[in-house]
Image (cartoon, rainbow, N blue to C red; front, side, top):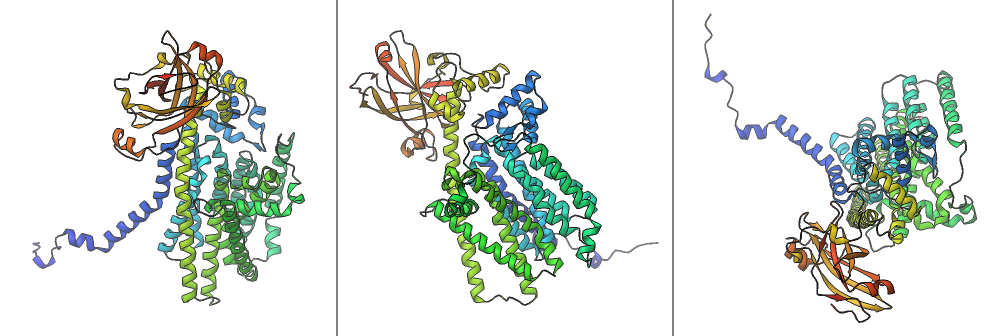
Length: 620
């Protein structure tokens, strides 16, 4: 059989224009664009973390360091893992940090990576919840998810992003959102309760407020396991053993949690809110509104309270609508996940109010709390969308010109507040990096020139304890770079072919009583960055330069210098500080030298300056 060819039956050639105009191609481009758009917030915060993270433990992280060191000597016990730390029992975080310490030679930046990965998990969970609960078209869902991601990956949480131990703030939310996804799944009722119970145990033994997982997840489980058209009493009887098992498991683990529990030393009296109710309300509202209260000319505390009030009103209106629609089981099932998400920051705020009010109302604005409170914003947004969708479908509510204006104004205010807060927070991350580099410089010199004032900012437990812990890490090879073993800076001096490239001492002025203020700029050409810290040394007659003081690099703009030596003006090269000269040093040393210090290599690079004599009439 011969098959004849007909030119008209042949396929038309594929051209670039036809490909670009094809429906499939446009659909794929839109999907790819949506994915790129959704990951932008995560990409931005990951870049900021990489740029500003410093490998140095700080504050409570040293308590974890003790546990890690114990694990290397074989003395680690279960009591060490479950030991109370402030209000928490950090069993699971301690296990994670111990494993990371062995894998990374105790590089705490990997603990920050844990926080980022947990935030990614939270983002994926909320994306799944939005797919299940929002009836709108795909474009609206993607818009809501984009807003959600910008709130989750918000740099206002800078102290949580840049402190490894703060991953404990993310664990309960990751467990709760995962539990909500499980509750909405098609798994059996037993599987849902079992998995959510396991997640609640992890949450409970990770962070103090993680105990709320048992309370937050139960309403969602009870609502989402109720069958269609099943009477409530019959539904309750069917699930009574699951409910009894949930309550019994919670009671068992709560008993273990509070066995031997003691109120942390130095924490305020829990009755403070009862003695000062107005301050308690202010604290609670500021706690809820803090994620968007920065970077404006308005006082942050006042703005946070206003935002917190608006959030409470929004949630109240949404709950009121749900109550008058109590027979609408489908609406309740769509809403219960977001209600549960809102309950967590609400109860956390109440606990913080009773436990922390004594520290002052402004303590409610602490950056790390926003890891929790940002989710009440997310919940309020989704609940509003769900309620409005339902009201419009039942013709209880119709969009008109005024409602459109209100929506536009509200969206504009939200975006404006977020943008101002975002740029403010980026500056705070940079400032925190500068402080951590300074503190790490102090830590590296802890054996030869300890500075108690600086080291107290690193660890409030005292210089001796910090010295012991850091030397233990150094012996394990987990101090990178190792601790410095000499106070003679010339022995750690790097090659300086042209000292003018590294910086200059601009001014030095006597403040009287052998106290001096100094100012200049410093740069590390090998890393194309500002110096990590400034070393101030005094040189004796034999030419030895002994460390007098470590000075933090301040975020001082020196555009003229930055453009000249770095090729751009975005690097803050300026520094300033003060130092005092004792009588003993004044007799032994003859002039000052200034060095740019690199904490990655423990190398010092001498800066250019005129000869500086140490006397009461100092000249430069």
